[in-house]
Length: 112
Length: 116
Image (cartoon, rainbow over all chains, first blue to last red; front, top):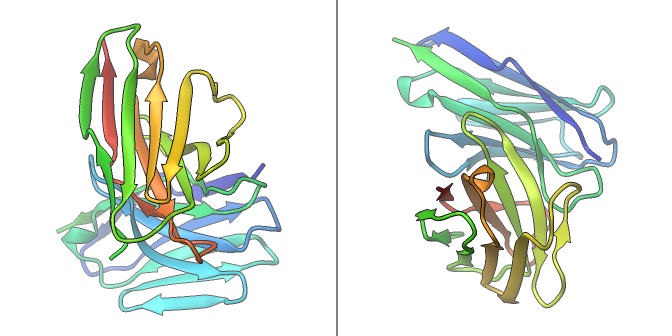
């Protein structure tokens, strides 16, 4: 099945700085890569996604890049704010399962 | 739009009892829904894919007789944890994929199950 690795597990940045979270996947057939933000005790919220026919996608302060050859994709958050503090999960839809395979998550801490 | 509800939000039960969790898509139809499990400070693990009108597809290692899934309509899937034990205590989250979309999933708010 699909295997998604996510790094780092914890990321602490100063408010206003940028944050980058990286993921790799194993199934070359994967073609959909969403990123979710989850606050404690809450549901995962889709913040951005990218499909395999696109290399980069941006939505205000959030961007995602995809390198299909290397099988990795990254989340970039610029001008970080305190409300960006949360756990972020990457996911991929490969491995034969219809559902998503999630990375282990990154706890993003924005230091004031 | 794209709202998914789950009920109950929290449930506490005794060992040996069964618990039913409902997942509803409120403003769209979803032939396909998914059930995930999340342990504290851990990632989401796909348990099964729920398909309206057919049997659910379970991931490897998930006992289908223990986690019964019924997808009776295009807006409702239920997960029943049978003969619950303390190790079944977890956060169960469903998601629904709008018909006509092959990718995007919208998540419910989750159900915190505690088995005493």
